[in-house]
Image (cartoon, rainbow, N blue to C red; front, side, top):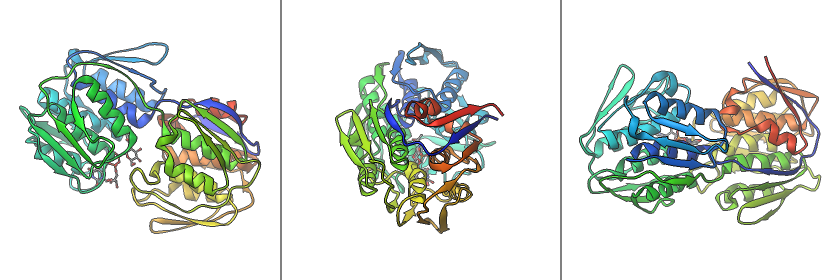
Length: 419
Ligand code: UD1
């Protein structure tokens, strides 16, 4: 298994380009299945989750072509198998995003349940209940969600929890339903709005995407279209923290500062000087040590859970103490024990981490447990004394496009080694 070696201590400086958003490209690739003709998706990041989605569509018989600029053309008309198999779904929960589109377009869908989860408990009950309210017959057999519907019917859906992929699945399904669907308590994430822009370009009638009430007037058919994926706000936030934690100065281009308000406020509170344009952000820490900042995660536009681990690393070396409260996912503090092995002073109680900033972290072999946890370990490695070895980095490749190249471009001492 490959590892990353990071020698800490350099203040990052320079400019990099931000890639397209993982959480926008995955639902958009799924949405191409709704069309009667091919779609072209641009600004696609090089990510394992994108490859997995392409493999998933390919297994269904969908034709895909990729050019050297990572524009992906998807022709759904060759589809044969309306199944998302367990081997792929278990590696990427977002595979569930094909459920709504294939059911709405082809009247049938068989999607494996994500590993270790049952309907009724955590993961996809809201997706399923929404589809049932739209008239689908849904059963769980042999670990698969088997959904059938001749044509979905518009319905009023009140989501019990704010769910991003749940909102996306139901919004996609509603585009081809008969009548109007209203999704209340919808997720307001910018990626939901980007998906709605894609669907609208296909011919869908959607109002309110980006607010907590989305109305979809169903249409008979949708056509393929061309779309450029919105920039990745979590990748942006991660490199801003990399600048801040190292006392450096970084400029990020091809991004969207307006999707990062809650994160930027916290970086300023940590002592960063920020300048923003419509598509760039510059952070200057002027060599200073960050100040500790409290963070509480919640659905957009509040502070994103996908930035929680990175701010835990920032607070670990900051001046002062802070609390980090996670309200979106249970058990999302797996990075804490690893950062503690590097000398951090962090105590977790329930859904809150109490962080006391230390002057210095020390390199240690650490292990990535999930995507954003891996990012936090790399950030800690950038400031630790000595050489940090991050193992199990396949997580990072799921969601960060060329992370070691981008960090090297900013002057970090980081390299990838084979196992
Ligand atoms: C998406 C993002 C992920 C991000 C998360 C929260 C993608 C591909 N992934 O994940 O990066 O961390 O939003 O911002 O966009 N829930 C239920 N029942 C459901 C669905 C969700 O109870 O049917 C709960 C979850 O357990 C969780 C909360 O709702 O506590 C939010 O999860 P959700 O927004 O669905 O996360 P994802 O869409 O999987």
